[in-house]
Image 1 (cartoon, one colour):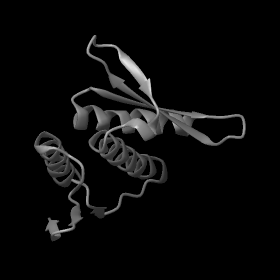
Image 2: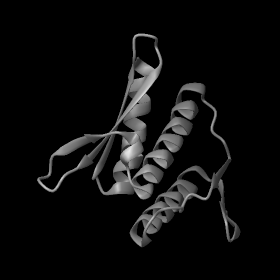
Image 3: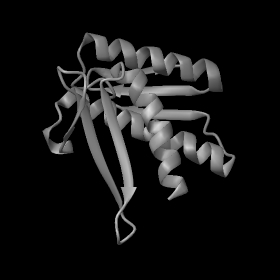
Image 4: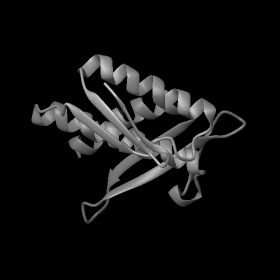
Length: 131
């Protein structure tokens, strides 16, 4: 359960940055010790509303996916004391609007400078590599 809580915390930090705090993810262990996921979206009244993952828009889903992947990588780095020097993302900007693309770019640039990593982003129009 501690690892699940750590994954939720790190993933949520990334999701807050990618969604301006408008989305929330929750992870839990069910009785069979499988990880369950819950998605929440801030409503017009400012409160979070639970939504099935399948009902999220493409951009909301992409933000959750990126946040979870980056959160997992950070958790492995912290717990396993091993940090990758390469991050490859397959079409990370798919389904994102201009604001979403800018948020992803800002986050990836911050990670590059913090970790001295190389990031490769594969898009359908070709491959872009940032170092």
